[in-house]
Length: 245
View 1: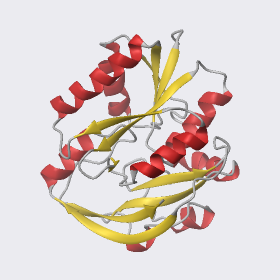
View 2: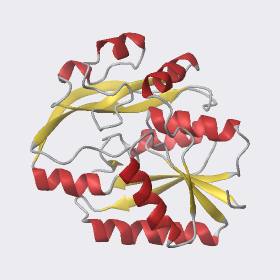
View 3: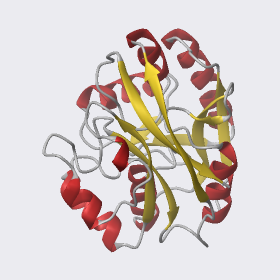
View 4: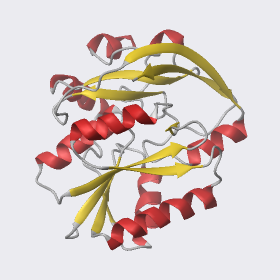
């Protein structure tokens, strides 16, 4: 791994949180900031739909500065890559030499990240890579992390899974075709407590809302993700549980 600082690509969810915990535990280079893409039209975390106020409280309670990458509502891939490169080059000028990700097993996504960042001489690190997802979610729960689902794909999970606490009961109730960590985009989460937090993030659950995506809308939004990859786009809908600061 390169000398210098690291930037952590932060989604606010459980895979990011566990990867951050493992990265810190292994005495890796200093993390200069958490980097998150935000939909500037709605002021919410891309795809997860979490309000930026809660994202900011996460970073504050973890104790690592937050850098928000503001994206237009539906960026195409060239626009997304241009914006991300500008942010990363600025971070590189401040001493960042490594970008850390919470990806688990999506080979194409890992190769994409490594190829793109190699162009600007930044290394990639994947602290939870190839660890079985059932093992990861059990470790997440055992370590005392606490999280709630904020977005579920209706192709895999019904409305009742939106806003649920991620615990052993949740994992047991997942259908067989759903990855225990939602690595294929089946669900997304918001972590509000755990060993990386100085204190819990306070929030209340708001309404559960439904949003239908066309194939093109979903492709454009998924192109701008920084967290786990997602399946090929389809005309489908998502259930979102709004979290209120």
